[in-house]
Image (tube, rainbow, N blue to C red; front, side, top):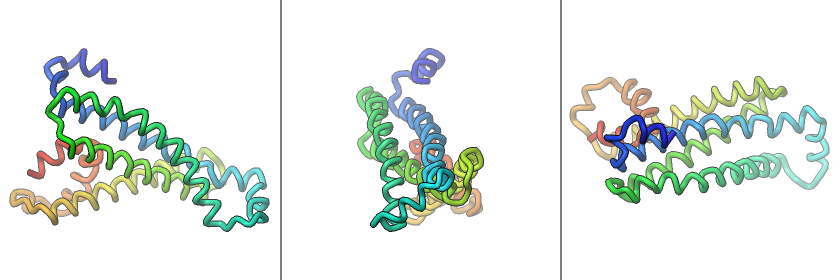
Length: 193
């Protein structure tokens, strides 16, 4: 994607802010999809194979089992985020991106990872089969991502009031700017300024 962007839009290739937005949006979409898919079969596989009862016979509590499953998937996806750090650092090296932009992008990616894992685990608890669990996990992930973005943008509007945005209805501010914040944080910050 990065090569396509540089080849097709050479006028933006040396602009770090635009490049960070493109890289962040791609990584956010990938995490949005793979996080719930990875966790969508965590508990349901144990139920399907009949091993959940065996896990309950051990000294582990239900909370320990869920935290263990969540931790295993979080570590695996955490490696993905760590592997993506060099790509996120390219725009910082090019210039035009400050440390808080980089940290905001990283925080949003971690929030999407957490929301996707929670959504996939919730779907895994509710549905027995893998296919429906993935669909339900993606649906819950979308809801959690909208809720995360809406909460973050609402917090930003409360902390940093903007006069021209007061005229926009609250539903558009929450459910319009929330997903924009999650995908394109630099542009959302410029809109709110």
